[in-house]
Structure formats: C-alpha cells, structure tokens
Image (cartoon, rainbow, N blue to C red; front, side):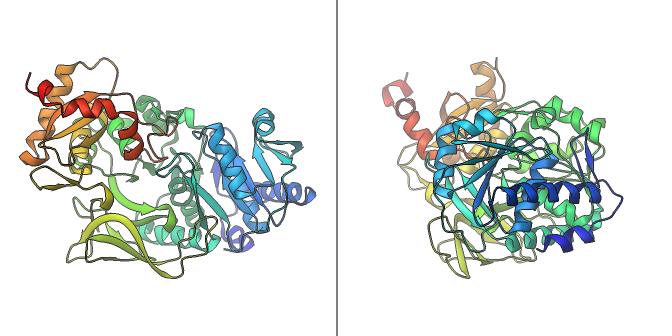
Amino acid sequence: MDMNNLLDSLPASAVLLSNGRRQLDRAALVQRIEAVKAALCARRIPGAAVAILADNDPEWLVVDLATQALGLTLVPLPLFFTPAQWLHVMRESGAQAIFCADPRQAEALGFGDGLDCGGPLGLYQGAQAPVVPLEDVQKITFTSGTTAAPKGVCLSSAQQWELAGALRDGLAPLRLERHLCLLPFAILLENIAGPYTALLSGATTICPPLAETGLSGASGFDPQVCMDAIARYAPHSIILVPQMLQALVAAAAPDDPRLRSLRFVAVGGGKTAPALLDAARARGLPVFEGYGLSECASVVALNLPGAERAGSVGRPLANRTVRIAADGEILVGNTVARYLGQAPAGDSWLATGDLGHLDPDGFLFVDGRKKDILITGYGRNVSPEWPEAALAATGYIAQALVVGEAQAHLAALIVPARAGLDAATLQGAVDRANAGLPDYAQIRRWLPVAPFTPANGLATANGRPKRVQIQAEHAARIASLFDQQEANQ
C-alpha cells in the first residue's frame, strides 16, 4: 500500500482518528506522519526495525503509517508482555529504536537517547549492532504462542492492507462510520480489522486509552466501564474476544440502551459457544463470530449480515481459500507464512493445526485443535474446546481447561467469572453445561483456579489458554481430579 495514495484517498474534512480529546483529520494526520518520518530520518533509522511500546492512541497509528511510508519494519510490543519477553522481542527483531511515552521503559530496554517527535511518544535510540534489514517485512507481530519465548510472525504491508480491503468490502452494506477500539493495537486483530479497515472506509477510528474502555493489565475487564464508553462514543463497530463478550452479556440488561449504536460486533480469538452468541443477541449485541491466525494477518473467515450460519465462523473472506485435509485439519491457501529467522514458506497451503469442516454452502466450522483432541479411557474423541465453551456460556465461569486423556471421565480447572461465587453456584453452572453435552463429554469433577493470563504465561494475547503450561503449573491439582480414592468419597 502506497501511503501517499492511501492518504490522498481519505476524505479531507472527516475526523479519521480520535482518542476522545484529540482529533485528527486528513491534514492533521499527514502532518503528524511527516513529523515522525522526519524524526526517524534524523536518527538515520531507515533500513532497520523500530519497536513501539504504547497504549492505544492515534499516535500509535501515526507511527505505524510513518514506518510504512519509510519502508521500515515495525515491532509492536504488547503491554501485557513481561520485561523478559520485551527484551527477547528486541533481541530477536534487532530493533534499533523504540517509540514509547515513558523514558524509563526505554532505558530499561537499552534505549536512552531520546528525541521529541512533537507528540505523546518519544523516539529512543540504543547502541544495538546494525542488522540486515528484512526484505518486504513491514510488521513483526510476536505471539505468546505455546512457549514463554514469543514467536515472531513477519507480515508485508500488502498482506495487511489486502485483508483490510476484504473486510471493507464485506462490511460495506453496514455503512460503518465509527469504530471503537477495545483491544490493544499490539494485537493484530484490532490493528488491521479495526483502524486499517476504517481508514479504507473513510470511517472514524476512536482509540482512547484502554483503561477508559474497561481493559486493565493482562486480563482485567470491567464491562460496565466498557458499556459506558460505548454509550459515550456511539460506535457502529467493535471487536471482542470471547471472555469480553461473556462479561458484557452477564452485565448488560436486555436491549441495554448503551449498546444501541452498535451495528457489528466481531468476536474471535477462541471458541465461542452458540448459546453465548444467542444470549449476546438477546442483549442487543449484533455479534458475528470469525476465525483467523496471525500468519494470515488475522481474519480468515467471518460471519456477516446476510451471510451467517449458526455454529460456524463464517465463509472465508474474498482474499482467502480454505480446504480440509484428509485428517480434518483446516488448510488456508493464498497466503505466504513467514516466521522471524526462517525463510518464507512459499505460496502454499498453511496447516493451521485446527480441525474443522466446510458445509455444502462453504461455511467453515472449527471443531477444535488437532493436537488437543482428548481420547478418553473409553475411546471417545473429544475436543476440549467443546465442553469449555459450554462452561463459559453459563455466565458463571470465565475460563476453563478440560482434561481427561485416557481417563474414565473428563474433569476441568475452572476460573470463576467473579469473586465470591461459592462451590454450589459453580456446581450448578457445571450441571447446566453438562445438560447440553453427551455423557462422554460431561465434566464429572472440577477445581477452581486463578485466571489464565498472558502475564502469568498461561494464556495467549487473545486469551486462549496455553494448555501445556497450565497442565504443568497445575499438575498436582489435575492428578487429584482423577484420584479414585478421592472420587469415591
């Protein structure tokens, strides 16, 4: 995407970016981009990678667009990463400078020579050794993945804007004019499906600090603060992960007036129970489930108004092709997956690691993770995401991890939806979930545990539980769930 062409195509007088206090129209946006470009050129940064560690704000997007205009690689640092993970990302990416608001954070990461860019973020340069620039890599998004060391996915500018264009075309009939950002920009889903798509549509991106929309730390979310923000900014669209949707459904009244402006609510990042989607619609939330991967610049398939099917994640977007392998694995075509430190995989079918199927009308259904399928002691194959989604749909359980490989029954580690829920209430929630499951997929025993979060290494950025780490962390608890002597007492 040529930045000059993009900027020239934007409406001249419309507000494009806003944090609730500061607004940028096209002229102001161009001015800020040129100021950041000048700072980067003054530091002789072109040709290297640049990191950004910042809260949601128009300036985050200014930096994103400025680095694209100069052909730089941008490395977003999630605020919920640990300092050790930040250092790992900086070493792996070879970032030569960092944008951030707090000079102490820059200093802790080895960057001390600050430059005022005329905005809320300073540019800090370090003494890192020069590295060979990455060819055709505009962004390196680091996912927490399945290990403590984040893994870098390399994306070109064309890959990101191609997806934004497909989303713009799919959503065009809704005439979305205001998008409120609720997820961090360091998460690819918000970065591209939110402001990139809004820019292509000439819509306003509203991006106040995350605390003002209810998000705090790695996993804290206040649904009342979020709904108040929705009422205040009257957006037409938002993007949620399943845990946020569950909290909003539990807190909202039917047809809550604070939600009336919404025309499209995308939910992704993990399995969402159909019952939760139904409950969300009853609260006035026009929710549409989707599916994606960082390797594909986020969204692959998405339900849309007039093209949705219950239980599915929608049809593949116009820029994607999907097929199902002989063993049931979802394969995504028309993509070039590349990881930091590896050569591009080439234009081939990307094995997602997810199991699924396509119905006769082309709707994609995700049945679970290939490596996570449990085979019970009675030979039944169960995707743990199935009963986990049923547990979360009760409204009393925020997160769950189902276990039971080679066991006579399934069990679960359960994170209560809020403090103060007693064992009887949680057992009632488990019973309700079990009522909709066959006997071999029902939860026979459970234990409450602390939340799984990116900060403690037990969840990905999108809130998906990291099973290997959770099972290692809670090995003794899990073993007790299958202790026959205790089970028979």
